[in-house]
Image 1 (tube, rainbow, N blue to C red):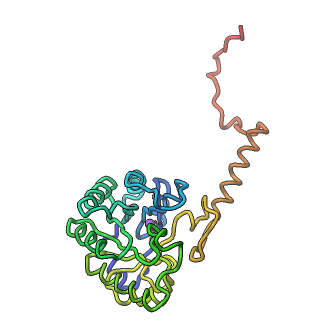
Image 2 (cartoon, rainbow, N blue to C red; image 1 turned 120 degrees about the horizontal axis):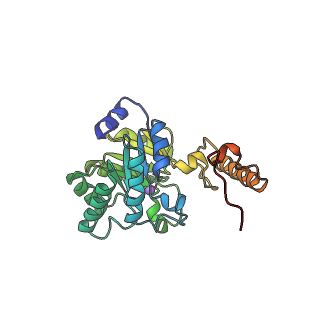
Image 3 (cartoon, helix red, strand yellow; image 1 turned 45 degrees about the vertical axis):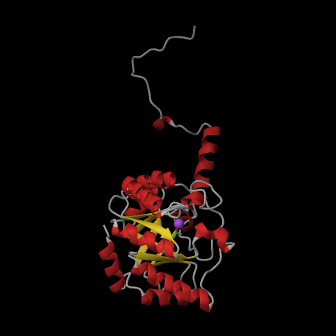
Length: 276
Ligand code: KIV
Ligand code: NA
């Protein structure tokens, strides 16, 4: 299993870090079998597997429920679990309590928090000091979508680009072990990557990040129909699944399933009573 040191070494060896999300036992198993370096139990699970409109409705209990399934499915992969909306904003004490629950109950290797405000820096530092490795996440941070006013690329102009560089450096200084960069111009992601000693993991952030992350269901086209510009798809599980289930329905309607080979038979000398 990768650890905070081996991930940092990958940055220095210029070996790209791969990360894919997973939300349950089978997806975690398959991601591990595909030799992915890190798994993210993202709060994107709200939309992708629970059918919510955004990540805002996701709770700590949701993250624990899914996180436990993932660590069971991928016991040999570095698993990061998202701290969900408002679970690290109410007070430092509450943030510590929620982080303790998620980290202990899931058995993950690290937690992830969004943003780079002074309050978040304090949370990152305190959790790190308590022994919980923290992955940072800046740029487009979906838990703040209602503040941003939509899903928009961040850091395009001078001021916002400089702010993101500053946030990334501050998060590193407060102990973050890696930094997700979401929906930022590729030149900015390259600059941040070269200025940090911790790995950057990009999503919609260009090819110069130290690693890349994609959502499992986007990568596979599985249960999703709208895809962002930054997604590349590698399969069409929607198509395969719909086709397979339609074939099953047609077989059942036509008495083509189950066949003899799917059926059980009585012992040879068993005689069933006639209908009374
Ligand atoms: O929740 C998620 O899937 C994420 C990634 C997109 C980085 O935070
Ligand atoms: Na997330």
